Amino acid sequence: MVYHIAILARLGFSSDSVHMLTDRTVREEKDRGGRRMEIEEIRLKYLNPQRFIEEKIAEIASLAGSGLAINALSGGVDSSTVTMLGRRALGERLKTYFTDNGLMRDGEPQKIVSLFKEMGVCVEIVEAQTAFFNALRGVTDPEEKREAITRAFYKDIFSGLVKESGARHLLQGTNYTDLEETVAGIKRQHNILEQLGIDTEEEYGYKVIEPLIQLRKPAIRKIAKALGLPEEIYNRPPFPGPALAARVIGEVTPERVETVRKATSIVEEELSNTGAFQYLAILHEDRVTGMRNGKRDYGFQIEVRCWDSEDAKTGSPTRLPYDILEKLADRITTEVPGVVSVTYNVTKKPPSTIEAV
Ligand code: XMP
Figure 1 (cartoon, rainbow, N blue to C red):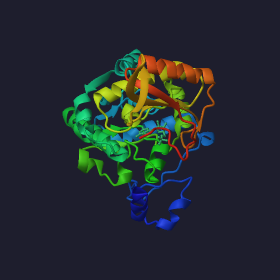
Figure 2 (cartoon, rainbow, N blue to C red):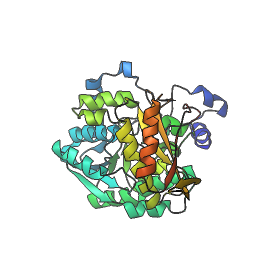
Figure 3 (cartoon, rainbow, N blue to C red):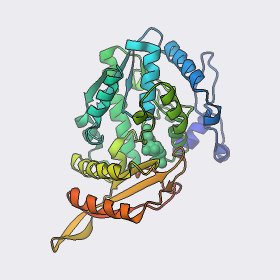
Figure 4 (cartoon, rainbow, N blue to C red):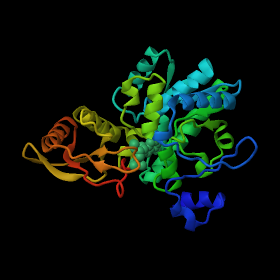
């Protein structure tokens, strides 16, 4: 709520009007004439993909001028869509990086880079594991964790890349749900900056361009498809910017990420054909007493979540068949070292959120 009220106060809203903003989110943005503009969602049913694509290409080209821009690709539908829009607008003047922050899923950096290579897009991997784990050392509070990731990403990594490359703009795939949740004070999404009062040019040395800010996930999928991205990308389940750190409760260490990474691979293998919106594994902070080979084993707990949702704004747990749940429990407790307990979350969003952190 802190962000929300502070931001709305800057925009001239009273705290009483806060709860009225359910469908419309505002942020401070000046157009070229210096007037304040509102960000309004473009609903799926009103979206004309070809027109949207043409408009965004023109907008990116005009904002970037004759300069260079960079963008961070994670392989998710949002950053992939931005990569293609940016390429169409700027061609080789857009440099695309994949940040290997040590928090990605098994084999993900290489998989994404080779997929984009097939589409003629050259992506450079940035080795940033040490920077991220250093930033996360000793941090257990969820919002502090998100803030540490934001800082590592935008300041430690991208400020340097911008200086090296001479770019003046960073293109990124912030979407309407990210904006709404951060402004509402629910969760600080890693990619929300200006809405929290961060002047990116002053803080990091570059401006941020967000072509997808008016769209939610289903609309972005439609744009991705219209841009010719493969189904593997436009139908890819969402994955959060803070990556597996959003799924480790408590301190994020390389060892704890490895535990959740192994559990994630199993959950994705077993649930990818359910048609669910998103499915994930979470590592809990508390350990519980278990037993293995007739002996006490004080071990880790993994929580599985599988969501039915349209756009991540709300969600319900998928009613998974019991034999799938049992298989998940058996595989995770035998294949992931140290895990003695697997639970399935049956809470809706709200009051839950999709990720645990
Ligand atoms: P929550 O956990 O807030 O997630 O219900 C809503 C949707 O957003 C994804 N998510 C993020 N995406 N940066 C992102 O780009 C973030 O910091 C972030 N946190 C959550 C989440 O996976 C879900 O699809």
